Length: 284
Image 1 (tube, rainbow, N blue to C red):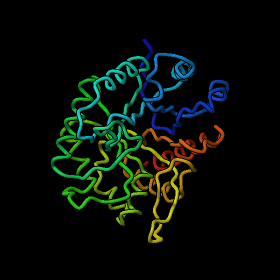
Image 2: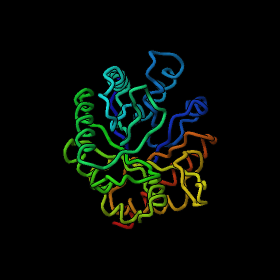
Image 3: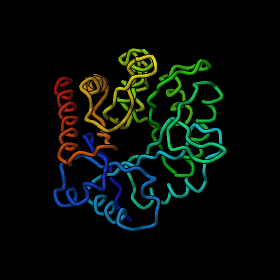
Image 4: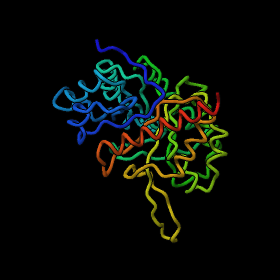
């Protein structure tokens, strides 16, 4: 069996096919690699050969996008079984999913859609997390969403909703700093106040990413969690604020579109390392 790894409190990057030769040849100095679970649910082939070689040298974080934790339908048992097999095969240090839904009576929607923060939604999400953790035999992390609208029927703030999920289920949290910044801009709240209310003690991993700016029908700027550009300076500043409040944590540089050369992502991971080192020196 593959040796289990823990992930050091360092910057990591996503494992991309475009970088396969460079990663194996250069062995970049990063803390870990993260992969989307659904990209590796086939039985074999080049993707698995590549991931196996990388996994022998680096810790791994597994990030799911297809469970539909917030969906009204029952969880897909076959999907859970494939996840369990993948986790057994690669023994990732962390497994995470999204606070979102993507399933409907007519099939699967290729998007991560928002939820109203109500008692009914809370019970459904907690039931699905309990089922997932029982099926996988391990803790999962839950990621906060990027938001473009707010539901009038919501009776919880997002930090309170996520705190209650963690309390009821014992799941850990993945704090996506870019999602906080995007949601704060789009919904008009203060990201620092959000962080002050968030259950930071339950966070085990952080995501950083770039975003795009577009205009809505009224000409207002809307931020999109696009993962196609470097991490914005404002997001780095919010990350520094978070790291000053908590200990250093595994921090992923997310880039899923317009993939740059490997060295560009490694440089951003090293920037995260520098932020964590500076915070540790300041606290000493």
